[in-house]
Image (cartoon, rainbow, N blue to C red; front, side, top):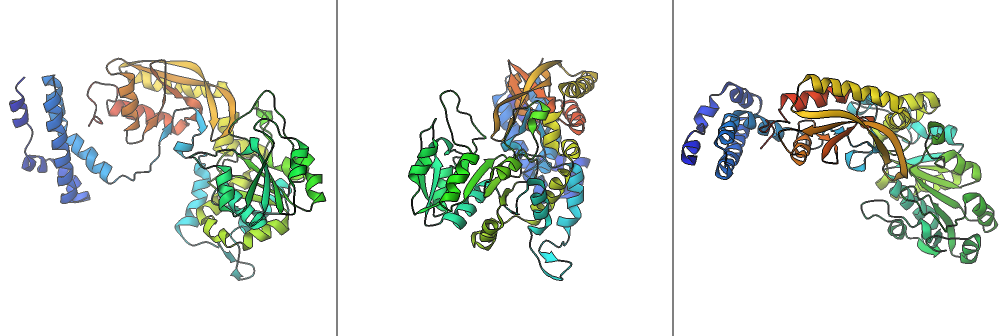
Length: 474
């Protein structure tokens, strides 16, 4: 193989600049951007030739230089955050944005966030209003609480609650509930930032009523219950429920706060899942303040929702931290729309993507898998493809032991390795994030929408992702 000849066959810059497609890119973007892309791709090409052991592959890369330049220019003007296809089967995938918002809800939110709105303006009174007013009555109606508000996430909820109710005092919590909520953020650390002193009671696996009773002093400002939604302790265990703590708290005139973590407004047991304590149950049992996430089992935007007794919610609304932790206009608008769906459980399960994925029968998932498989096979791609049963998971720190029967399309490439295919799928214009199981790519169709099916097929075909040389190979 004559590498010097290969180097000399690389098109000159002035020749590339005469290419029709590259001329169009110069008109659309700028000459400087295109020149930068040309130099980047030519350097990569020279490096590829230097490492190449197959002359035909090197020649193929040279022929693809203009296409690679186009892709690089396009990447320079593509936002780093973009839509991906979630083929992992994890419904609340924290790394992929957790709960998706429905296209219909986004369509209704668009005019509210692309223009002006009455975010903090009371149209009836003609004066300043409150951003919580758009969804507070809804939350109270749905949960039975006296008042409600929302901040930017559930860790913020805990911070604000304890800062408002217990700053300078003590908060009692079971050792078995001192959870880490992801990214090394831990409940004890969040509590410390609030200015409240943590008083741990019981042990990791067992906490009794008298542990709480014996720990109460004049400095005690609240009892905190944390629902361990992201893990389970099984075996020799014991804990004290909200209903048992309420009389003790009333006796000492201190509030009971419950952090539900995921937060759910409907009984998931109806849909074949393990029963998860609902927000309504906490209020009925007597919790004074309850907080939970908006973007987990609720199926809405990222938010920390706080509900409970009006006197405590009012204290939080007046706390100076509230302004630093407040939600924006997108969150307020999206949260209201999602909560409105819960006025009818049937509509909520149908129209909220998370609930729809959680409750969709495997038979329906199987139909979508057949559609994806048929389209892929019609493209005659170089791979063995079939449908196999699999299990989806909820994710997002919710119901960690729960597995949902599902169906997947598996892909075993013929010309490249599974690892190479997985990497190429991640680098697509619309990245496809699969699972790799038993040396094959697995696309769990529970988390793949009908819209995603064609996106997957088009990209795998048009960009030759399954062939030895691909348009996305850099």
